[in-house]
Image (cartoon, rainbow, N blue to C red):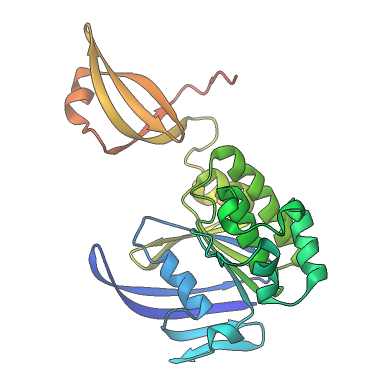
Length: 282
């Protein structure tokens, strides 16, 4: 069992706030941290890794990593950290990046085989694509067989096809190594595919905690389905108004009333829904 009970004063875009979280995690779980930017997600990851100070209790099994203000040094914590910007050593080959963590060639070769990087192990990071770099970063994080794998939006810079491929590899490694994983993500589909539990933060507090279905699904039964998107433009065509909305990677057009056209503002987040549950799926 992992016990997290921490408190830290933060200064975010909305002013001073307390990051105050208290929850437990079963070992081997895959947790997604969700919430708006500035809610404290990345700071929480950095506290768990020991890269940032805080007060409270952090207990991983029988080990105390934080007690009051007394914290275990980052290098003594058995963690893996996958950063958004890869954080690879540019002057080391793929293989050397892995062996820097642990001199275990058998494990390094096994990880490179799982992630289809074996043919690239003598290459330098600047010769790799973004997806390949992120796979190296993931392999390196697994080299010390971490008790806790921390990932801060690891796939946000990748295209959708590569994201899906790496999501499968992340899940494969998570299950094979039996590690406890905590991932920051803003992508509902990514959270749904990977996580067994979602913890939502807002202004440093936990406001929701449950399964991906409980937390992310905004519909009830067959009453309606809905999507969130950004309003890009409102165009008047003859006597009707058409809203152009970005939903995920797609743009959609929706006919709206004159009253809605006057009320809505360009750039705001809106929800598109229907009460007649008879969608066409192609």
